[in-house]
Amino acid sequence: VDGESLLDPTICCDENDPPRGKMTAHPKMEEVVMWETNIQATGVRKYPNPIGWVAAMPVEDKADVGSFWSGYTKEQPNLKRPRRVDETIGNQAGFMATRSQVEYFHNKACPGGFLPPFDSQHWKGDSLQRHSVEFWSGGFQLFGQCYLNRILPLEPRRFEKHLIYHVSNNKQRTAPAKKMIRVGDFYGQILTVKEKAIKFAKEAWGIELT
View (cartoon, rainbow, N blue to C red):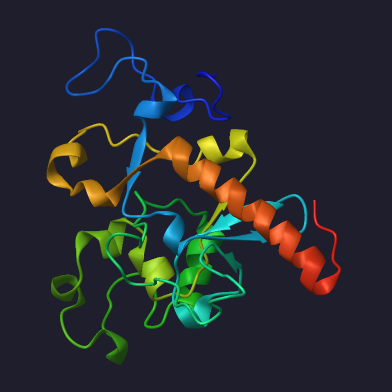
């Protein structure tokens, strides 16, 4: 593990030397960045085992099952959590699903269905023209329309496996710096929010969380 980081960059992003294309050989954790999400839009929640503590990413308001939001304070309880803000929406790289999960998406979870031909009234005309590639391949359909929640396990070895290397390495030049954050910094901030949630649960409700 690199330095004092709890995360291992080799899980997602290791590359031999000399590297291919614009990739970085054996990157350090401090060099691994993510974009279009930050702690401002993230909460934490503890699920029953084996899931445990997770980071809760932005979803539609009516789909949200609840989490302790990083922006919550007793002094300002009416702050609004970002949902559809480009800098924080956390559009994912893709998704994987089993056959039975796809059937659930299509038959139950997703208005208008999840699979072609997309000819129900829900789609209102040419759906392929109206929606972006991120909607179809990046998972926006699932968390933006099908009301699925998105979580990141906080156990470091599991968290690492949710990171995917964007091998074109072009976002550093094409995306504004305000959309970038070091993965290690983001992870540390989430753990801080987790500690605040544990303290809040004990003080407000007398619940002991670990």
